[in-house]
Length: 144
Image 1 (cartoon, rainbow, N blue to C red):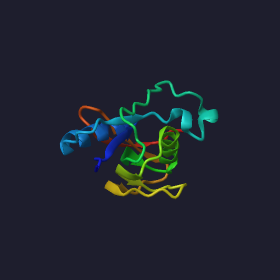
Image 2 (image 1 turned 90 degrees about the vertical axis):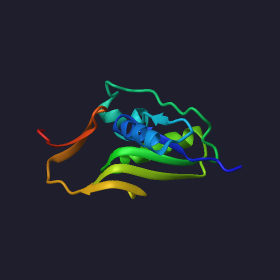
Image 3 (image 1 turned 90 degrees about the horizontal axis):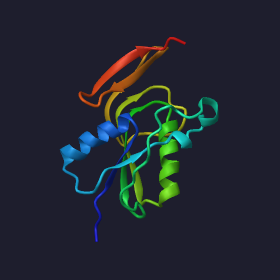
Image 4 (image 1 turned 180 degrees about the vertical axis):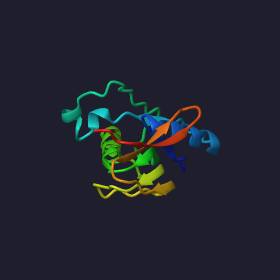
């Protein structure tokens, strides 16, 4: 029996994008969500993020094709953490990565399969998805 792919969004912006994709594509499989806070490699440095959300994977992911959705791909560390969490739950058949925005600054060899737009930012700039209703994109200056 052929199984349909499972869409999983990464909190917070990736969930917003995944919710929109799930609705527009009319997918029947339930939407999954991941909070990768405890899987981050900088967790001991930054501590618990004040808005930790729960992960929700409503169906078994064993042998399933997954489309992992995030808002902005920058260093690749969020995607690495998300895959670590997924593999703690199951062994999927495959994982495709869809991102709304890809930007410069990759630190890990992570490349998206589906990209909404690519941007190059100036030093000290970062990009932020706002939402969820309406969804928007802001380019901000770091003030450190």
